[in-house]
Length: 392
Image 1 (tube, rainbow, N blue to C red):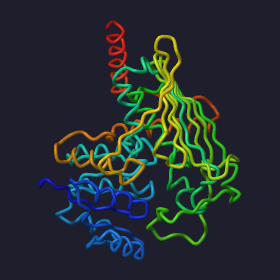
Image 2 (image 1 turned 45 degrees about the horizontal axis):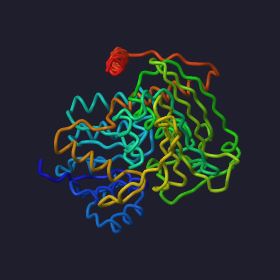
Image 3 (image 1 turned 180 degrees about the vertical axis):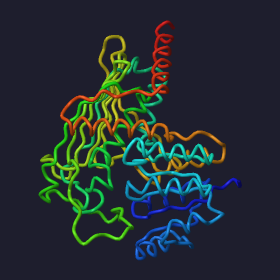
Image 4 (image 1 turned 90 degrees about the horizontal axis):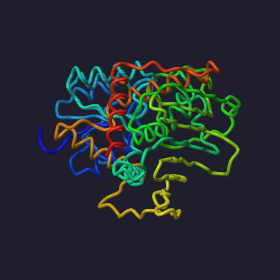
């Protein structure tokens, strides 16, 4: 391979973010895009100077000079398109969620291993400077033992197009949990070290969507490229969900996500609170803000102190959501034969957790999560690491 990764983007509604990030990354160049909407395809080709455009993703995958592809399609299309891309010899950057169930996500991971190609899931919020700063402090031991996390994403009015694939469970997999909560779960689990889950207790609501309330339409909405039936699809997902997750090592995670609530007008905020034995932190991002988002709390010498970091201006920041840094990492993994972070295994673990959350909400009962041998070994390794740190 040359020192430049040639990329294609399949789905250029939300996928336009990938095109922009590939343009910004010095190690990548977008050479082709695909979209079933001819007007949007033509618009994006002109907007980004892309010479090749396809209406069928299979045509794009046949191009021998494309090294890697981004997949930004409706959730239930991620698995077949990702597997087809891997079979065609392409590395894959898949939009979140990787699939609509844990078992389906595992199919992509198996294909990536079989065809020996890189698979990365687009959990881009862990690549924001504020999240990276928290991770650095954790790695340095500044928090002591991180024992609990609270996280969530709250909106006043943000239900995607009523009758679209977003609000149809068969195509989306769920509502705000799988749309917004998937980002917050990854961020929290990543900071916790992706520990094995023991139990999940969840409750969900659908108070606005079934009645057509609080609908939000944005121009970048990802369209479903398949022929659509005349009858509108049902709203059969949640518009709010809460969950408590207990881990096998005794730690805990609390989650709250919604598309719609009676809260302050225009609210579209996500948050993450870390509780450690030596320090704590609050990450609060209001309407995709990039400054003054994180505060560290500690009491050195018994005196309580709260500080806010000032992040240096990076050489280039094309997007406030971390897509540019994530694409940089994806490119380096391809060129230097490294394992992507987040990789497919984390995507599978996260989707299995989401499976358990939905199962608990549906049954009205706590769900005990069965662990695989790999997860059990990971827990033992984490426990041993903690003991070693305590001895030091």
